[in-house]
Length: 397
Image (cartoon, rainbow, N blue to C red; front, top):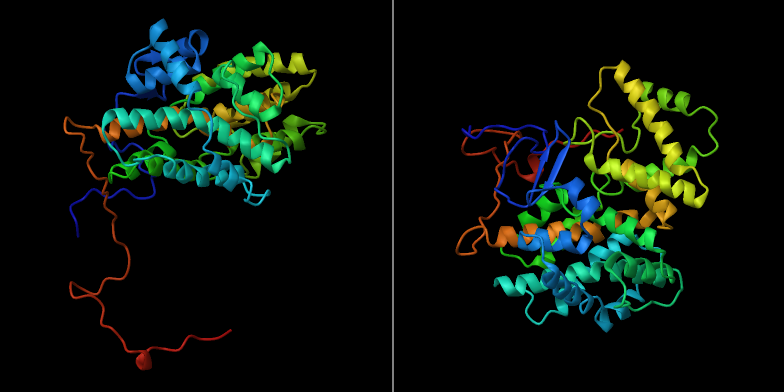
């Protein structure tokens, strides 16, 4: 038996696997920090591009640096023609996250040297990916809808341009600002599953494209991305429900999940949810709907029921509060997880860079965890091999 500490079925919770200077979470106090800055300050006073610059370079930009960085991203928004040609050949019913994941290797093929690992090349690659993910998502939605793919508009800001390419009309200033804040809130979140996947892959000295492809694969899983889609599906089902409180209590008492309630890290509330709740109520008034109000009814009923059960650490998470916001912005349900990716690409790229340059020589340590073997054990020499003729026949029926 190995002397390695055995960790069983914990999903590595509480296990430190690497140092990072990118972000910090205090789940007990509901604190989220990017590079030393509270998420509250960034959401209220910064922009997504400022936040991206902070994550990639470690400091907030001055005016000149931000203008230069913004110009570089705008110049990289367009997709190589062969990528769009390929996307037109794909099944129109394909899942957006699968399309997004399949598109990243195509971008690698457009890179003249996708495995160049000097810092400048890696930063260039990060800027291209951050600039092009919104274009990929918007292009796929237009293609599958039979609409003309719209080219990026270099006169528009990042979030504003995405909504233009997606919906074919320039959003009003408040909607563009709201989406920009959403991107800030989702840009980074320490070693979540997708970020860990990206870092683990590039620890092999694979390219940033390989790391981001892995991250998208992790995000597509039901326990990581996609929760906001399922929250909105729940709210749509509840639109005609007469007694929300009764529905919530019955569901909890039956041991069923209330989508968007609970978080792997936060025990006292997700700090990002505060801004999304306020945004949702404002969008309710603007659109004449009550999706955010309905979400609050579900949340209040769930919290009250959990309190009677002593489960006071279960709180609404960012997915719960973002679902009605994205829906009222006109984001299709199956694109909601891709919006997460459009934002989180900044965090993924920052972590890939940190992983690649973890020491002075820029040599990442290969991730190689151990597993506790719990299978058959027949001694050091192994089990005796039984020839086919001597094996027992399976019983039928």
